[in-house]
Structure formats: C-alpha cells, structure tokens
Image (cartoon, rainbow, N blue to C red; front, side, top):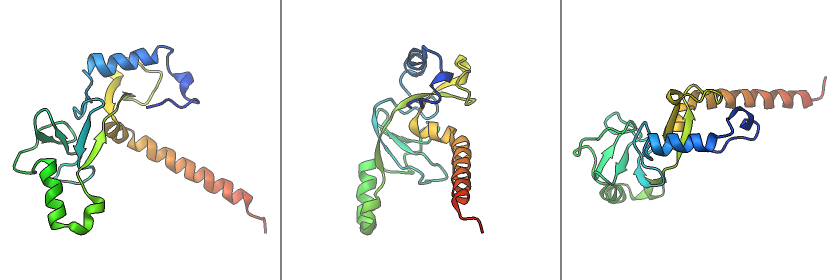
Length: 163
C-alpha cells in the first residue's frame, strides 16, 4: 500500500528493500494469513458466509476453495466457481448484477503488526494481501473514521451563526 506523505518520515530509508524481502523472500510471494499468491486473480466470495466461514477464495493450484485463514474447505460444501456462477444464474436470475463469486487481483503489502512504522523488527512485519491487511487494520481505520467525522462535525458547528 502506498505510504501517505505525512507518514513517510516514520519509515526507514530502505523501506522498499525491507518490504520486498518480507513479501517475496520470507513469505514466498504469498499472503502470510490466507496464502493468496501475489498478482494472481482469484475467485472470492467476499463477506458471504458458507458453513460459518467467510473470506472463501478459489485456489487454482489445488482446485479447491480455501477459507480466509488459508485452510482447505471440504469439496462437498461448494462447487467450483464456474459451476457456482451457473447455479446462481439458474436459481436467482434477478440477482445477476450482484453475482458472486467475483474476481480479485491479489496485491501483497508489508504490514506492521503493532501499527508502529518505526518498529521494523522481522517479527513485527507480515506480508498480507489487501483483504487480510484491511481486516488487520479494521479497528485503526474505524477509529480514524470516527475522529475525522467528529472533526468535520465540529468544524461545521463552528460555521453556524451564533444566536
């Protein structure tokens, strides 16, 4: 993920080399949480839960579905993505616009597990795909959105005429 200009100061000068080493030498070009390969297009089901599992994606190499943690899913639970799309069109033709599974191009990013960009210890860095990275940063992103909303609301209140 690109680094914001305001945050660039917190990263070391050799961050691109460090990030590359984590993503491709240590992780082998795969997400360290779910196992999705970098730059591959995979079928995924997004937030749809199947048998209590979310984040399902199709692993072409194994011809099997995997859960969001990278574990193989039982073959009996879901057919291959092409068959799944055909079943959806057959049984729910009105929902073709919201069809799933969808294709996703996987992009790996180097992530700080403790959210501190100055802590570049190998144990604090992880190679995560965009889905896992967003999930990891969910609480931080929510707090940032709330703070920004409060700031905007406060600025709007300051512009109101005083009665």
